[in-house]
Image (cartoon, rainbow, N blue to C red; front, side):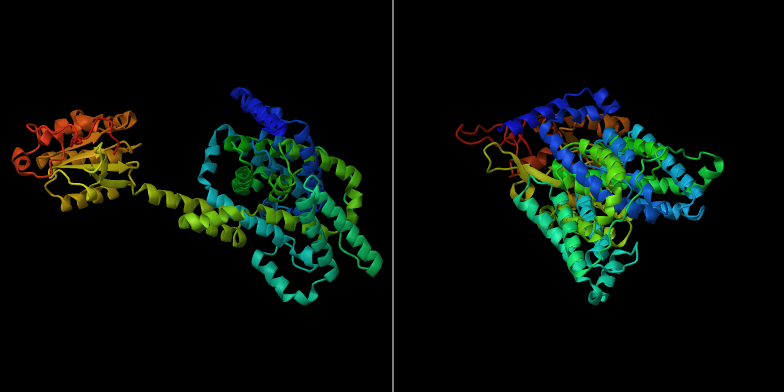
Length: 613
């Protein structure tokens, strides 16, 4: 093990050794021990890159939201620092986003003129209320809601969002006039209908930036390839301007000021004005943030605590309402850049917020020299890196159902809203899960005569007792699975009507609800009336408790529960019809031949205690 790897391992161990109560109160104490000279350098470069990248985006997002341009920058400062301190993701960077900006505009525009003082005041109020709800959900431990977002949903959502990132930069990459806020299909339709209007100089700068970033990343991995690429693109634009007189659009000069203190208006009228959109904005912001956090965590091998992420997002928006920000959530652009730039800890996101403060003060006026084409090239590179081609190919080869979920989420991300895409993916995942769990495995088993230990095997490959059937059930017996279990047992009865005794091998049953307990109780009563019985072998303690709680244990009879197959066979054999046993040629069990003694060299036709079915 190298010294670098050993240091990282020790740092991770130190982080994990943090007391649980302290980690919940101050979550940054969990990752702080991981910080060392190597991570500081990586986080510094990632934070600097992220601060530069957010300049044009912040202005654009604020414009979409109907806010003054500087508010898009303010929303990426303090909220990003607070979310990194109190969240759980190592790479998530909070700030303004396209989706949150669009929803904010749709909620507030009917109540105030966009850009006006009243509009800004309502935006601060909405941001504050969203933060309060997010914080409350986190403290109420509702972060488990994100467990319903499957890995396939995250992969499809990430790929779709990556395409959207590139799509939003098409107009800057090719120098075209495309209406702001155009959909995925409208943007690409506009591109193909305006191919004759593509500006070669703009495209050359964007392409040079993209290729330079790829080259530096490939051949000089220790260099900050995004910053190098942006500088290269700026120099190329300046050269074209001097040589050909070509003037490329730039980010433009930005106001050099820190975020002023602010306060949300909490009067009844303001709260009523924004109340209709608070829940929608909250759910969108949480869905976007946690989805991005999980997507990046899947890449880095990190675990994301949904509850802590809710808390971090809530506190960031509460803080944003007092520092002239508007609704902030996980930013795909900034988080993707942060991860791609090599960030190691949340310190990178904090540095990005601090650097943005400095950039706005010192560098903002110089943004007029940064061409939008160069920024588009960088974001094309980021978008490509977010698509997990290896995972997509693996899913295509191994699981068609999961691929269908991935593809549907991907398509919905492109053609619907981001929150609708997540909802569609989650609903499809739940449907697949219910389809699987509602059909537990119900197989007839029998001792294998060709196996020395007579382990159980599929009954189709071994003789069965004509009176006793062994059935293995793997899966929970809940209301959604009862119909399937009834149908399977009924079909087995039709195939072997003389097998009035049924022993259920219950090792694989983890849960039984009231409906499942009623099925077993009715089966026990029906078989008892027919002269047989129902028996359970190896039922877990919790399952037995659930049977007792639901009143089914009395119907089954506690004496019909056995720990092992050996005990079960010995007892059930006493209740079998002796006339049938005398004419039976299967001779499956030891009890079938009580007077015969087999040579020691031959395996005994008896299932030993503890044998696994």
